[in-house]
Image (cartoon, rainbow, N blue to C red; front, side):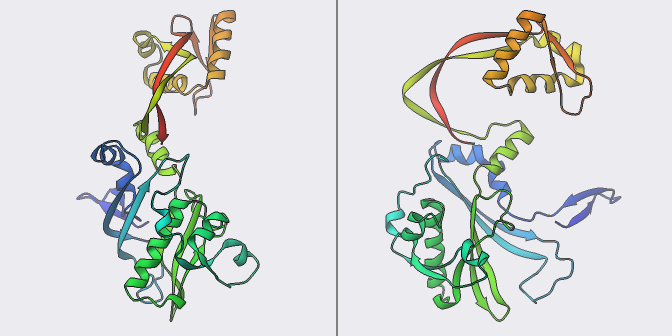
Length: 295
């Protein structure tokens, strides 16, 4: 990304955005509210983006500033079926899958989207649905179908956030050039923003029948926690909240036998001591009326 100076003295550094998608992830809760908390739903954004092309070549193909449009489609991660997949499953596209590229060939497979998904060449129905929609769009605006292909990303070029990714490429005088990227980003972006901002970016679905279970639950005495640990108090609280059920059970046993337990904060060499006056762990009954669908 390009860096740029900010402020009258130019002593502050800022960065120009490399994609428009992140604004949609940051506003996930508001977008979900607009859709009456229902899944699936989609959002779109368009605007200027920038790439740090040190030595731009290829004329208009590799420029530093360009207009970008992106659509994010949010689905239940446990079921990536698409309700309208049947409408596009018979559309025939040209695919260049990963295994063909690894064998050193560029022979495309002309098969239907339904065949590509059922064979797991394309990971799921939702991804296949949007590949088909991209194909139909490119055809409608006049692209020659014999000069269009979907190329699957190789393992060594797959973005860190993607579980599967295909580029719609056009054959031009510069060779095959990416025109549209279509990726299953999993929950990487929402999870990363949630951790960075301590804001829950999740979707909850109501259960037909409540689920009752017994779980370990830790309670911290915040009136004592703040004065004792000062700047580290919030980090200690977050550490305890992120403990798994097994960790809470083990911590409970240590508190019962030793009266205190050591915990380690990231970046702190010395352990932090929590005793019974600061933390209590008890077995409680929880009644769940909803489950988390997406995060």
